[in-house]
Length: 262
View 1 (cartoon, rainbow, N blue to C red):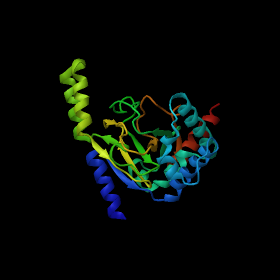
View 2: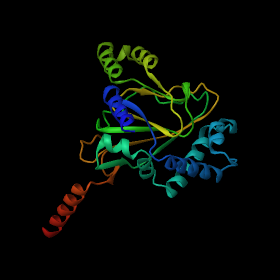
View 3: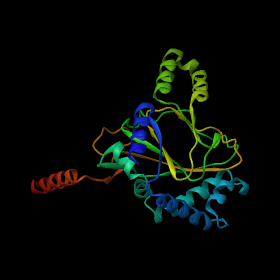
View 4: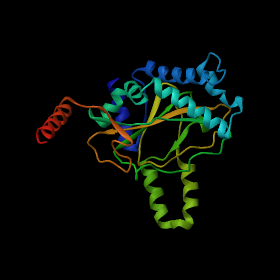
């Protein structure tokens, strides 16, 4: 296990991304089961969560109907579970090794449903800037993802090359650079029970899903509480999740001093 964790850290340090298996698979099963139960409150979902999610496109939802369904499901899910807490518990060892014991988490966990042939996908981009480069994104498949059902990431070297090409090409040549970048990205294939950790500075793209199954996934960001913040800051977009004993003591002491000074 120690060697696996070292491999994970070395891959992340070298490329900017790495895949980790959950330390507590039951936490991911809880998330998927809860989402499935919320979906069942809105439609006839059957009795198999993976089958329901993979075959979701057969229900032929789209547009406003699909968005209303997703938002209603998310509301019910968030009332029942603290996604940031549960995901942290699922991948605690990897997260603590990356960000340390003082942890802030994105307040909202994004849930994505990508049906086959849906062309409404995010263009190639990177989060930092304006997000802080001290954040890590967790992309968590709720079904097994392969081929175009996954995501595509450029590693650190590829991202730096794209940025350099964009400086030379300017606005007029940006489209050609982005199209080339899409072709050289690393296709991330991941099964349920794993997560892809990637640095906010990496270029990434969601390809059009050309497979025969629907992708369900989560994404959420974590950072060290005391690292520099980006445009999305505490307390509007992030919240404190974990404090080391030292940080807990120091923050309590500062609060007590502030009260005494009044």
